[in-house]
Length: 390
Image (tube, rainbow, N blue to C red; front, side, top):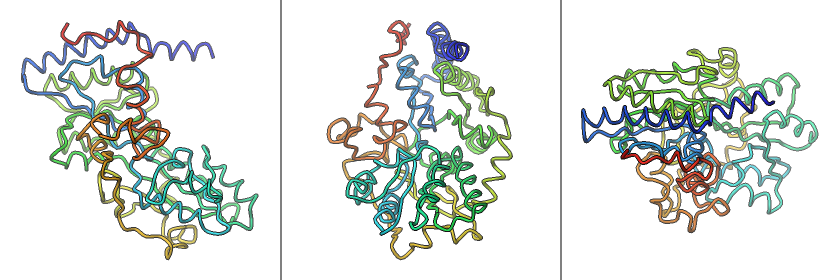
């Protein structure tokens, strides 16, 4: 335990961070000299990176021509209201137990949230391990259990394992509502938006452990955009920014893997094969803030239709798009068109205790991170909040 603690202290070492900050400033200056009007707009796709950036005040350490743009990498934040309404409708049925991961409970749909549904007397259960759903189904053989599955490529293997166990045990009372989404199509949707200024990506860590760093080669090949897969610690993120700045300074774009202690080019092949056995590409999925994106989500394979809650309860579920509250700017925030603090209801009508939009619900949401840390870290030593003019 002591060695592990020392390891993490190394990834948060102020002197190391300060050294990397100076190197970043040097590369940023090269970019400025070559092209005074050129800024480096880095989208961190993963909400975990947003959390690190805000918590440790990393954005305060960068030169003015490097700016973070918070991406759609929070699976809770991108869940459209109509899908949340599905969960509430299912949970409201007699003799149904709705099971989902913890963060989903408080996300507002058009009919309220699952937390409110539970408060009204319906059986909604939050779990952190999908396999806990098995025991719930076994303990309640006369009830219909529905697992509302969410997450990016990171969590799909656990859903696949759950499906595998359901088949092995012959459980008849466990259905699935699949809402797993994929990172590459979302990145493509961002790059295809002419309003978005992104010209570099910090690639997700956990997704890359499963799918491999090669997943993002398309961004380099098709959009000439640097991608650096990064770990979650402050030193990881700072080193990734340095690598991006160096690429921009040299006028090149390539795929780089900073997180090579956990990520390989091909990823976890066995996990990928397990997912492919039970899930396949959904032709279209509507992302909150980004709209419909083709081939951007997963569904159960046709031979598993008997496990599909969307089919069994089809007459109760509507797929008509439901837009966010007009005052909420989550959509623009997820596309990098504005910052959380630009939203008129941020920290006023919308807070983590009473969220109006999905970006305020999850700890990985951009609005939640800005609310909690305010853009200036309380954990980063003051001496590291360097003057970018130096």
